[in-house]
Length: 212
Image 1 (cartoon, rainbow, N blue to C red):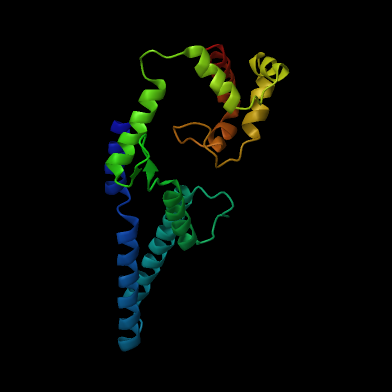
Image 2: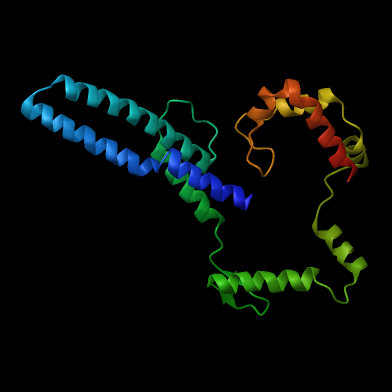
């Protein structure tokens, strides 16, 4: 995935260029043409150049919208709405919300530096899950006390029962088209549109996963 990501970045720069730089360039060229027309009048040359730039600008706006749509993971946006400022703000807000600014270590000291926060987390989980003289029974008892049992025996039996092709199809089509079911980023819309020739394989993958 890391190798593919680097290749896609290179391909993106060569094929599509930087959309933000291109957007600024087109806006500046359109402004130059507008100033020229106001001073000298419109000729056939300026008219054709302006029409071409407007087409390019429309395409750049679509890419700009899709970029922030993916960044923000918003689902309500309808095609054609240019709410890029909203997406930008949403993306930044989520990054800030997910960031850990401080944490207490095992000695009760507050850590604010990134490297200290990382080390504190490593030390904690190493002590909790690392090798050593661990009382497995007491650990499981502690987990049982802290974590509420949410699945009944009937629920477990239903989840472990074999699924039919129709079950998997219904589950696939119940997903929002823009949701990504897995870490590869492929959206549910892809599986829904390609179900006729992918459905059987998807069902088999699910059944193999349940056997693990």
